[in-house]
Image 1 (cartoon, rainbow, N blue to C red):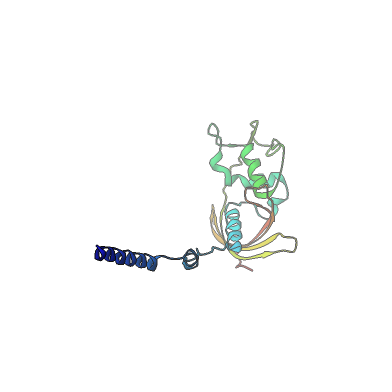
Image 2: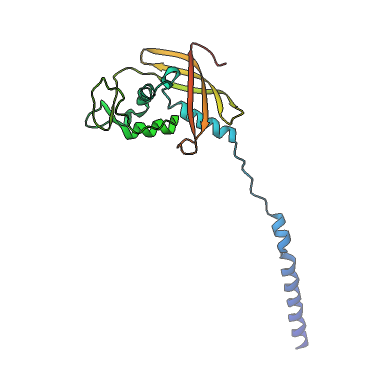
Length: 197
């Protein structure tokens, strides 16, 4: 019986020692965990992507910023998918006003005076029939100005209705937290047949 008791005690001690050898203290478990890699947001890349998105949906350049009518007519090509299904010569004012605000910061109560020499439909803007160019921008530089605005220089591939060209654009962006883009384009000057500045 003593022998049996001794064997049981030895087995219990062996088990106790083996369990204690394989246990890990909580402090060492925490220190041994590998930390999750920290991801840093590249704010410059985010800004460039946002500016590029806006520029590649922009059809307003140079003098188009002089009046709301010019800016509206320059903007309509970006909104052609929203044309009125009953009459594709018109687009709802709602879409045009939202685009003008989000893209350029222009707020207007009514666009009823736009294209007044052309056919009219209440609550709609007439789309003047014309060819238009598609602009594809590549960012050359982004400069933050002292007032917090950004000047962006881009090289532009222009796919015009009558051929192709290259250009350089200089665009001024200002912050607008109410805009869907977070920014507005204040002006965009384009010069054809040039390489980026």
